[in-house]
Image (cartoon, rainbow, N blue to C red; front, top):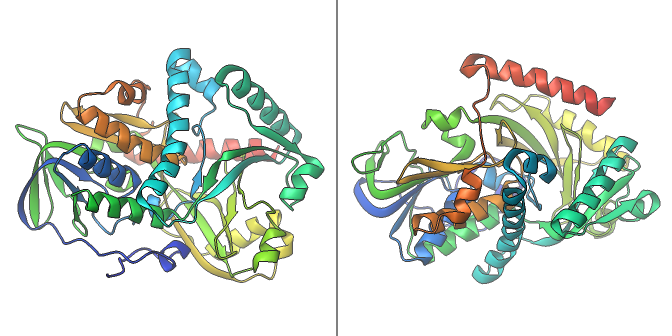
Length: 425
Protein backbone atom coordinates (compact mmCIF):
# COMPACT_ATOMS: atom_id res chain seq x y z
CA UNK A 1 0.00 0.00 0.00
CA UNK A 2 1.11 3.57 -0.68
CA UNK A 3 -0.11 6.77 0.95
CA UNK A 4 -1.75 9.18 -1.48
CA UNK A 5 -0.72 12.82 -1.64
CA UNK A 6 -3.24 15.19 -0.09
CA UNK A 7 -3.32 18.78 1.11
CA UNK A 8 -2.11 18.91 4.70
CA UNK A 9 -4.92 18.35 7.19
CA UNK A 10 -5.78 16.30 10.24
CA UNK A 11 -7.65 13.97 7.90
CA UNK A 12 -4.64 13.44 5.65
CA UNK A 13 -2.45 12.79 8.69
CA UNK A 14 -4.84 10.07 9.90
CA UNK A 15 -5.90 8.59 6.54
CA UNK A 16 -6.10 4.86 5.93
CA UNK A 17 -3.45 3.43 3.56
CA UNK A 18 -4.49 3.53 -0.07
CA UNK A 19 -2.98 1.87 -3.14
CA UNK A 20 -2.75 4.82 -5.52
CA UNK A 21 -4.16 4.17 -8.98
CA UNK A 22 -2.08 4.60 -12.15
CA UNK A 23 -2.24 7.54 -14.53
CA UNK A 24 -4.38 7.25 -17.63
CA UNK A 25 -2.19 6.01 -20.48
CA UNK A 26 -3.18 5.56 -24.11
CA UNK A 27 -6.71 4.78 -25.24
CA UNK A 28 -9.24 3.26 -22.82
CA UNK A 29 -12.83 2.22 -23.45
CA UNK A 30 -15.62 1.69 -20.95
CA UNK A 31 -19.38 1.93 -20.47
CA UNK A 32 -19.23 4.92 -18.11
CA UNK A 33 -16.40 7.33 -17.32
CA UNK A 34 -16.74 9.15 -13.99
CA UNK A 35 -14.70 12.35 -13.68
CA UNK A 36 -13.89 13.20 -10.06
CA UNK A 37 -12.72 11.05 -7.17
CA UNK A 38 -14.72 12.59 -4.34
CA UNK A 39 -17.82 11.14 -2.70
CA UNK A 40 -20.07 11.91 -5.69
CA UNK A 41 -17.69 10.22 -8.12
CA UNK A 42 -16.88 7.25 -5.91
CA UNK A 43 -20.55 6.66 -5.10
CA UNK A 44 -21.48 6.93 -8.79
CA UNK A 45 -18.76 4.47 -9.78
CA UNK A 46 -19.65 2.02 -7.02
CA UNK A 47 -23.39 2.01 -7.73
CA UNK A 48 -22.84 1.74 -11.48
CA UNK A 49 -20.41 -1.17 -11.07
CA UNK A 50 -22.88 -2.95 -8.80
CA UNK A 51 -25.38 -2.69 -11.67
CA UNK A 52 -22.95 -4.42 -14.00
CA UNK A 53 -21.45 -1.46 -15.87
CA UNK A 54 -17.79 -1.33 -16.91
CA UNK A 55 -16.71 1.87 -15.12
CA UNK A 56 -13.57 4.02 -15.22
CA UNK A 57 -13.05 6.58 -12.46
CA UNK A 58 -10.54 9.32 -13.27
CA UNK A 59 -9.26 11.77 -10.64
CA UNK A 60 -6.98 14.75 -11.29
CA UNK A 61 -5.15 14.41 -7.98
CA UNK A 62 -5.70 11.74 -5.31
CA UNK A 63 -8.96 10.12 -4.26
CA UNK A 64 -10.65 12.46 -1.79
CA UNK A 65 -8.23 15.30 -2.56
CA UNK A 66 -10.94 17.97 -2.82
CA UNK A 67 -13.85 18.90 -0.58
CA UNK A 68 -14.78 15.28 0.15
CA UNK A 69 -11.53 14.72 2.04
CA UNK A 70 -11.28 18.07 3.83
CA UNK A 71 -14.79 19.01 4.97
CA UNK A 72 -16.46 19.61 8.30
CA UNK A 73 -17.79 16.05 7.87
CA UNK A 74 -21.23 16.59 9.35
CA UNK A 75 -23.85 14.22 7.94
CA UNK A 76 -26.95 16.40 8.17
CA UNK A 77 -30.58 15.96 7.15
CA UNK A 78 -32.06 18.34 4.61
CA UNK A 79 -30.43 21.06 2.55
CA UNK A 80 -28.62 24.37 2.91
CA UNK A 81 -32.01 26.08 2.35
CA UNK A 82 -34.98 25.58 4.65
CA UNK A 83 -37.53 23.20 3.18
CA UNK A 84 -40.35 25.80 3.28
CA UNK A 85 -38.34 28.01 0.92
CA UNK A 86 -37.68 25.01 -1.30
CA UNK A 87 -41.43 24.35 -1.45
CA UNK A 88 -42.01 27.92 -2.70
CA UNK A 89 -39.42 27.29 -5.42
CA UNK A 90 -40.43 23.82 -6.67
CA UNK A 91 -43.91 23.23 -5.27
CA UNK A 92 -45.13 21.16 -2.33
CA UNK A 93 -45.01 17.75 -4.04
CA UNK A 94 -41.42 18.02 -5.26
CA UNK A 95 -40.37 19.58 -1.96
CA UNK A 96 -41.67 16.50 -0.15
CA UNK A 97 -39.86 14.22 -2.62
CA UNK A 98 -36.64 16.17 -2.13
CA UNK A 99 -37.02 16.00 1.65
CA UNK A 100 -37.50 12.24 1.60
CA UNK A 101 -34.52 11.81 -0.72
CA UNK A 102 -32.33 13.92 1.57
CA UNK A 103 -33.27 11.69 4.50
CA UNK A 104 -32.42 8.68 2.35
CA UNK A 105 -29.01 10.25 1.79
CA UNK A 106 -28.29 10.22 5.53
CA UNK A 107 -29.39 6.59 5.81
CA UNK A 108 -27.32 5.69 2.74
CA UNK A 109 -24.13 6.92 4.42
CA UNK A 110 -24.72 4.56 7.34
CA UNK A 111 -25.72 1.70 5.04
CA UNK A 112 -22.59 2.06 2.90
CA UNK A 113 -20.36 2.15 5.98
CA UNK A 114 -21.95 -1.05 7.27
CA UNK A 115 -22.09 -2.88 3.94
CA UNK A 116 -18.49 -2.18 2.96
CA UNK A 117 -16.91 -2.18 6.41
CA UNK A 118 -15.62 1.39 6.08
CA UNK A 119 -13.56 2.47 9.11
CA UNK A 120 -14.39 6.18 9.26
CA UNK A 121 -15.26 6.90 12.92
CA UNK A 122 -19.03 7.29 12.46
CA UNK A 123 -20.72 8.91 15.47
CA UNK A 124 -24.41 9.76 15.78
CA UNK A 125 -25.82 13.14 16.78
CA UNK A 126 -25.90 16.65 15.31
CA UNK A 127 -27.34 19.96 16.49
CA UNK A 128 -28.07 23.36 14.91
CA UNK A 129 -27.65 26.07 17.56
CA UNK A 130 -28.94 29.61 18.07
CA UNK A 131 -26.90 32.53 19.33
CA UNK A 132 -29.69 35.13 19.73
CA UNK A 133 -33.39 35.20 20.48
CA UNK A 134 -34.41 35.75 16.85
CA UNK A 135 -32.66 32.50 15.98
CA UNK A 136 -34.31 30.67 18.88
CA UNK A 137 -37.69 31.63 17.39
CA UNK A 138 -36.53 30.43 13.97
CA UNK A 139 -35.56 27.04 15.42
CA UNK A 140 -38.93 26.65 17.15
CA UNK A 141 -40.80 27.49 13.94
CA UNK A 142 -38.66 25.07 11.93
CA UNK A 143 -39.24 22.31 14.47
CA UNK A 144 -43.02 22.75 14.13
CA UNK A 145 -42.83 22.85 10.32
CA UNK A 146 -40.84 19.63 10.07
CA UNK A 147 -43.07 17.82 12.53
CA UNK A 148 -46.38 18.98 11.04
CA UNK A 149 -45.58 18.92 7.31
CA UNK A 150 -42.74 16.43 6.88
CA UNK A 151 -43.31 14.01 9.80
CA UNK A 152 -39.78 14.59 11.08
CA UNK A 153 -39.29 15.18 14.79
CA UNK A 154 -36.35 17.08 16.26
CA UNK A 155 -35.62 17.86 19.91
CA UNK A 156 -35.49 21.53 20.89
CA UNK A 157 -32.87 21.84 23.64
CA UNK A 158 -32.67 25.19 25.43
CA UNK A 159 -30.66 27.12 28.00
CA UNK A 160 -29.49 24.97 30.93
CA UNK A 161 -30.48 21.73 29.20
CA UNK A 162 -28.36 22.71 26.21
CA UNK A 163 -25.43 23.71 28.41
CA UNK A 164 -25.32 20.26 29.99
CA UNK A 165 -24.52 18.92 26.50
CA UNK A 166 -22.63 21.83 24.96
CA UNK A 167 -20.53 23.73 27.47
CA UNK A 168 -20.51 27.13 25.80
CA UNK A 169 -22.28 30.26 26.97
CA UNK A 170 -22.48 31.49 23.36
CA UNK A 171 -25.52 29.35 22.51
CA UNK A 172 -29.04 29.55 23.93
CA UNK A 173 -30.97 26.83 22.05
CA UNK A 174 -30.52 24.05 19.54
CA UNK A 175 -32.38 21.56 17.35
CA UNK A 176 -30.91 18.11 17.97
CA UNK A 177 -31.13 15.18 15.54
CA UNK A 178 -29.93 11.78 16.69
CA UNK A 179 -30.18 10.34 13.15
CA UNK A 180 -27.60 12.73 11.70
CA UNK A 181 -23.97 12.50 12.74
CA UNK A 182 -20.33 12.93 11.75
CA UNK A 183 -17.36 10.92 10.46
CA UNK A 184 -13.81 11.03 9.07
CA UNK A 185 -14.54 12.26 5.53
CA UNK A 186 -11.31 11.23 3.83
CA UNK A 187 -11.46 7.70 5.20
CA UNK A 188 -15.12 7.49 4.18
CA UNK A 189 -14.23 8.56 0.63
CA UNK A 190 -11.29 6.15 0.45
CA UNK A 191 -13.60 3.41 1.72
CA UNK A 192 -16.08 4.08 -1.07
CA UNK A 193 -13.26 4.06 -3.63
CA UNK A 194 -11.96 0.76 -2.27
CA UNK A 195 -15.45 -0.73 -2.49
CA UNK A 196 -15.77 0.54 -6.07
CA UNK A 197 -12.43 -1.00 -6.96
CA UNK A 198 -13.50 -4.35 -5.49
CA UNK A 199 -16.67 -4.11 -7.62
CA UNK A 200 -14.52 -3.84 -10.74
CA UNK A 201 -14.07 -0.09 -11.22
CA UNK A 202 -10.77 0.90 -12.83
CA UNK A 203 -9.42 3.83 -10.78
CA UNK A 204 -6.95 6.29 -12.30
CA UNK A 205 -5.36 9.09 -10.27
CA UNK A 206 -3.14 12.09 -11.01
CA UNK A 207 -4.92 12.29 -14.38
CA UNK A 208 -6.56 15.68 -14.74
CA UNK A 209 -9.14 15.83 -17.51
CA UNK A 210 -8.16 18.69 -19.82
CA UNK A 211 -11.01 18.56 -22.32
CA UNK A 212 -13.89 16.42 -23.50
CA UNK A 213 -16.09 15.85 -26.52
CA UNK A 214 -19.79 15.11 -26.37
CA UNK A 215 -20.41 13.63 -29.81
CA UNK A 216 -20.57 11.45 -31.73
CA UNK A 217 -19.29 9.42 -28.76
CA UNK A 218 -18.41 10.96 -25.38
CA UNK A 219 -14.68 11.09 -24.75
CA UNK A 220 -12.53 12.66 -22.03
CA UNK A 221 -8.88 13.51 -22.58
CA UNK A 222 -5.97 13.85 -20.18
CA UNK A 223 -2.38 14.82 -20.94
CA UNK A 224 -1.43 11.14 -21.23
CA UNK A 225 -4.46 9.41 -22.70
CA UNK A 226 -8.13 9.44 -23.53
CA UNK A 227 -11.18 7.54 -22.37
CA UNK A 228 -13.98 6.66 -24.77
CA UNK A 229 -17.27 5.94 -23.01
CA UNK A 230 -20.94 5.45 -23.78
CA UNK A 231 -21.77 7.82 -20.94
CA UNK A 232 -19.86 10.34 -18.80
CA UNK A 233 -20.47 11.63 -15.28
CA UNK A 234 -18.95 14.95 -14.21
CA UNK A 235 -18.52 14.80 -10.43
CA UNK A 236 -15.77 17.33 -9.76
CA UNK A 237 -17.94 20.11 -8.35
CA UNK A 238 -15.87 23.27 -7.65
CA UNK A 239 -12.66 21.46 -8.63
CA UNK A 240 -13.77 21.03 -12.24
CA UNK A 241 -12.79 24.70 -12.62
CA UNK A 242 -13.64 25.75 -16.21
CA UNK A 243 -13.60 22.30 -17.80
CA UNK A 244 -17.36 22.72 -18.37
CA UNK A 245 -18.05 26.48 -18.54
CA UNK A 246 -21.83 26.12 -18.38
CA UNK A 247 -21.48 24.30 -15.04
CA UNK A 248 -18.84 26.68 -13.68
CA UNK A 249 -21.24 29.61 -14.11
CA UNK A 250 -23.78 27.91 -11.83
CA UNK A 251 -21.53 27.58 -8.77
CA UNK A 252 -19.26 29.81 -6.72
CA UNK A 253 -16.16 28.18 -5.21
CA UNK A 254 -15.98 29.52 -1.64
CA UNK A 255 -13.10 28.77 0.71
CA UNK A 256 -13.82 27.53 4.21
CA UNK A 257 -11.32 26.56 6.91
CA UNK A 258 -10.81 24.15 9.80
CA UNK A 259 -8.32 23.77 12.64
CA UNK A 260 -7.64 20.72 14.79
CA UNK A 261 -6.41 21.18 18.33
CA UNK A 262 -3.89 19.01 20.08
CA UNK A 263 -5.42 15.90 21.70
CA UNK A 264 -7.42 17.09 24.70
CA UNK A 265 -7.94 13.77 26.44
CA UNK A 266 -11.33 12.14 26.84
CA UNK A 267 -12.39 14.00 30.00
CA UNK A 268 -11.50 17.44 28.67
CA UNK A 269 -13.12 16.73 25.32
CA UNK A 270 -16.35 15.66 27.02
CA UNK A 271 -16.24 18.86 29.07
CA UNK A 272 -16.79 20.68 25.77
CA UNK A 273 -19.36 18.44 24.04
CA UNK A 274 -20.74 15.94 26.48
CA UNK A 275 -22.58 13.67 24.04
CA UNK A 276 -20.05 13.81 21.14
CA UNK A 277 -22.50 15.47 18.74
CA UNK A 278 -21.52 17.66 15.80
CA UNK A 279 -22.49 21.33 16.14
CA UNK A 280 -23.36 24.02 13.59
CA UNK A 281 -24.63 27.52 14.35
CA UNK A 282 -27.22 29.13 12.09
CA UNK A 283 -25.44 32.36 11.22
CA UNK A 284 -24.99 33.10 7.51
CA UNK A 285 -21.20 32.94 7.98
CA UNK A 286 -21.29 30.06 10.40
CA UNK A 287 -19.08 28.14 12.80
CA UNK A 288 -19.16 24.33 12.87
CA UNK A 289 -17.28 21.95 15.11
CA UNK A 290 -17.06 18.45 16.54
CA UNK A 291 -14.72 16.10 18.38
CA UNK A 292 -12.44 13.64 16.62
CA UNK A 293 -12.06 10.02 17.65
CA UNK A 294 -8.75 10.88 19.34
CA UNK A 295 -10.39 13.69 21.37
CA UNK A 296 -9.34 16.78 19.43
CA UNK A 297 -11.68 19.65 18.71
CA UNK A 298 -12.11 20.14 14.97
CA UNK A 299 -13.35 23.72 14.56
CA UNK A 300 -14.41 25.21 11.23
CA UNK A 301 -15.65 28.52 9.91
CA UNK A 302 -14.61 31.68 8.10
CA UNK A 303 -15.00 32.11 4.34
CA UNK A 304 -12.91 33.53 1.53
CA UNK A 305 -13.40 33.93 -2.19
CA UNK A 306 -9.98 32.86 -3.39
CA UNK A 307 -8.24 29.48 -3.35
CA UNK A 308 -5.33 30.98 -1.42
CA UNK A 309 -5.05 30.05 2.28
CA UNK A 310 -5.13 33.24 4.41
CA UNK A 311 -1.87 34.12 6.11
CA UNK A 312 -3.52 34.67 9.47
CA UNK A 313 -5.56 31.47 9.34
CA UNK A 314 -4.55 29.97 12.69
CA UNK A 315 -4.90 33.28 14.56
CA UNK A 316 -8.30 33.98 13.01
CA UNK A 317 -9.62 30.50 13.66
CA UNK A 318 -8.30 30.54 17.23
CA UNK A 319 -10.20 33.78 17.84
CA UNK A 320 -13.41 32.22 16.47
CA UNK A 321 -12.86 29.11 18.59
CA UNK A 322 -12.29 31.23 21.74
CA UNK A 323 -15.67 32.93 21.25
CA UNK A 324 -17.23 29.49 21.63
CA UNK A 325 -14.83 27.87 24.08
CA UNK A 326 -12.77 30.52 25.94
CA UNK A 327 -11.40 27.67 28.08
CA UNK A 328 -9.29 26.62 25.08
CA UNK A 329 -7.33 29.90 25.00
CA UNK A 330 -3.94 28.27 25.56
CA UNK A 331 -4.64 25.08 23.61
CA UNK A 332 -2.20 24.20 20.84
CA UNK A 333 -3.40 24.05 17.21
CA UNK A 334 -1.84 21.02 15.50
CA UNK A 335 -3.44 21.28 12.05
CA UNK A 336 -5.01 24.04 9.93
CA UNK A 337 -6.37 23.68 6.41
CA UNK A 338 -9.01 24.81 3.97
CA UNK A 339 -10.87 23.83 0.84
CA UNK A 340 -13.52 24.94 -1.62
CA UNK A 341 -17.26 24.54 -1.13
CA UNK A 342 -19.39 24.55 -4.30
CA UNK A 343 -22.15 27.07 -3.56
CA UNK A 344 -25.05 27.36 -6.01
CA UNK A 345 -26.97 30.62 -6.35
CA UNK A 346 -30.06 29.22 -4.61
CA UNK A 347 -28.03 27.02 -2.20
CA UNK A 348 -29.60 23.85 -3.62
CA UNK A 349 -27.95 20.91 -5.42
CA UNK A 350 -27.60 21.24 -9.18
CA UNK A 351 -28.16 17.92 -11.00
CA UNK A 352 -28.77 17.38 -14.68
CA UNK A 353 -27.51 16.38 -18.11
CA UNK A 354 -25.31 18.27 -20.55
CA UNK A 355 -26.45 15.88 -23.29
CA UNK A 356 -28.43 12.66 -23.24
CA UNK A 357 -25.26 10.76 -22.28
CA UNK A 358 -23.43 13.23 -20.00
CA UNK A 359 -24.60 13.61 -16.39
CA UNK A 360 -23.45 15.96 -13.63
CA UNK A 361 -24.07 16.75 -9.97
CA UNK A 362 -22.71 19.76 -8.11
CA UNK A 363 -23.72 22.72 -5.93
CA UNK A 364 -24.15 20.87 -2.62
CA UNK A 365 -23.57 24.15 -0.77
CA UNK A 366 -22.12 22.75 2.44
CA UNK A 367 -24.48 19.78 2.79
CA UNK A 368 -22.38 17.43 0.73
CA UNK A 369 -21.51 14.47 2.92
CA UNK A 370 -25.00 12.94 2.73
CA UNK A 371 -26.20 14.41 -0.56
CA UNK A 372 -23.12 13.48 -2.60
CA UNK A 373 -23.47 9.78 -1.83
CA UNK A 374 -27.14 10.01 -2.76
CA UNK A 375 -26.21 11.80 -5.98
CA UNK A 376 -24.06 8.86 -7.03
CA UNK A 377 -26.88 6.41 -6.38
CA UNK A 378 -29.39 8.51 -8.34
CA UNK A 379 -26.97 8.95 -11.26
CA UNK A 380 -26.56 5.17 -11.44
CA UNK A 381 -30.34 4.77 -11.49
CA UNK A 382 -30.64 7.35 -14.29
CA UNK A 383 -27.91 5.75 -16.40
CA UNK A 384 -29.74 2.43 -16.00
CA UNK A 385 -32.95 4.00 -17.34
CA UNK A 386 -34.80 4.82 -14.11
CA UNK A 387 -34.36 8.59 -13.93
CA UNK A 388 -37.48 9.58 -11.99
CA UNK A 389 -35.67 10.29 -8.72
CA UNK A 390 -32.70 11.97 -10.38
CA UNK A 391 -35.12 14.21 -12.27
CA UNK A 392 -36.68 15.49 -9.05
CA UNK A 393 -33.35 17.22 -8.45
CA UNK A 394 -32.93 18.11 -12.13
CA UNK A 395 -36.21 20.06 -12.01
CA UNK A 396 -34.84 22.52 -9.42
CA UNK A 397 -34.34 25.81 -11.31
CA UNK A 398 -30.82 27.24 -11.27
CA UNK A 399 -29.37 30.46 -12.57
CA UNK A 400 -25.89 31.69 -13.32
CA UNK A 401 -24.17 33.84 -10.71
CA UNK A 402 -24.65 37.45 -11.79
CA UNK A 403 -21.72 39.56 -12.89
CA UNK A 404 -19.88 37.01 -15.01
CA UNK A 405 -16.32 35.96 -14.32
CA UNK A 406 -15.18 39.52 -13.58
CA UNK A 407 -17.88 40.84 -11.24
CA UNK A 408 -19.53 37.83 -9.56
CA UNK A 409 -17.06 37.74 -6.64
CA UNK A 410 -17.52 41.46 -5.77
CA UNK A 411 -21.28 40.95 -6.00
CA UNK A 412 -21.11 37.98 -3.65
CA UNK A 413 -18.90 39.94 -1.24
CA UNK A 414 -21.58 42.63 -1.04
CA UNK A 415 -24.25 40.02 -0.35
CA UNK A 416 -22.11 38.33 2.29
CA UNK A 417 -21.44 41.67 3.98
CA UNK A 418 -25.19 42.25 4.22
CA UNK A 419 -25.83 38.88 5.86
CA UNK A 420 -22.86 39.28 8.22
CA UNK A 421 -24.35 42.58 9.36
CA UNK A 422 -27.73 40.86 9.80
CA UNK A 423 -26.04 38.18 11.95
CA UNK A 424 -24.45 40.86 14.13
CA UNK A 425 -27.67 42.83 14.55
